[in-house]
Length: 215
Image (cartoon, rainbow, N blue to C red; front, top):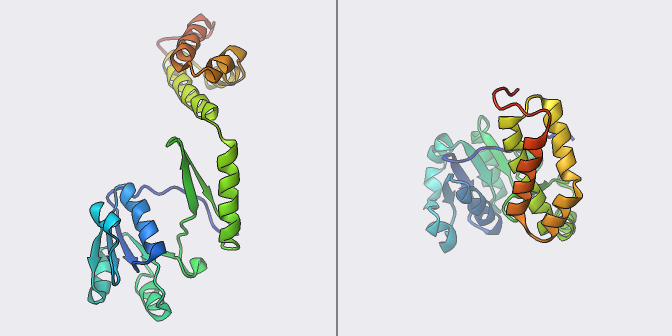
């Protein structure tokens, strides 16, 4: 598999989507939710994406829209038109919903858990069904307590960068907090503020405390 997983900052990106069906609309939602400018070419514009700012253009505007776009999404049932747009957009980022391998960008099945974690699943185009199955399986095992752990790790890292010198010291402390039984009990009881106070106390008691220097 010669694809590399990356996250692309698409805020203020100009995105042209060929097609207005289910797949095109779903991808439009994704990009609009992340601050992109989205124009679709097709026969009908879903009212929900229209509310978010999506614009519908006619087929006569295709070459102009390719030139305008930073990313081209091809999601039409018209194979001949898909191939034409793909050829015209050869110097752009191109996602082909019909034949992903013919583009240079793949949009995987992705989902958020409690807004703080996004997980993407890519099966190299072998099985969308298995991708959905794995999504449900992953969602079933991640708990609210895991998200609180994430919040506390983020809080701890930020405090350590200010107060503790040395990456090794900070890394050891993060592991200690992750495995701390008192923290675990506070998480179970949803006592986030108390957990942060406990972390502050542990950092301030550490013999590696250094308020002036950091690496």
